[in-house]
Image (cartoon, rainbow, N blue to C red; front, side, top):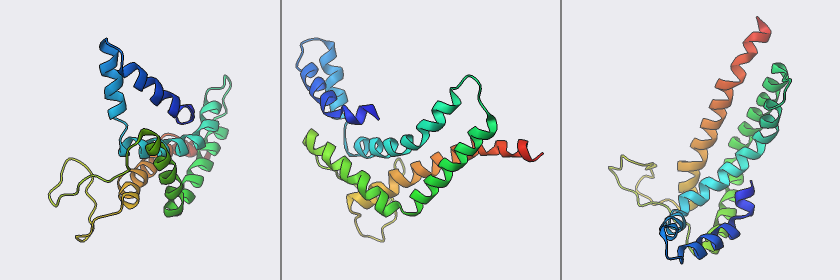
Length: 167
């Protein structure tokens, strides 16, 4: 994902723009402040998931597309993502470490949101009174739900077409 590769340059550019004396500086400053732990973790998760989808995306953009091949490619992606999902602790650790490197560049610390017993407007995983480490918190609140939703969308949008071949 190009944004992740160019991240240091994006940050430097936003920092420079935030020093300007026009309206652009406010927008640049807001963008910089929005690059928090949740953003960085989400960016890493998306980078990994979209790396699986790039071949399928290119195949779907061809002029003459074969539905059977597209469904087969989607099926392969779903299977690969399900394997990643089963090994989520190891897989997410790599994503978390990459997020920490990005956070160091921004001079921020990856930290989980404050938990509350009656939290209703954002994820609040049950911890039996223990506070989760940031890595566990983000794995539970961002990575796992995103992967599950991604797999579900692929199944709903592509794998339903398997019925066409069987009927």
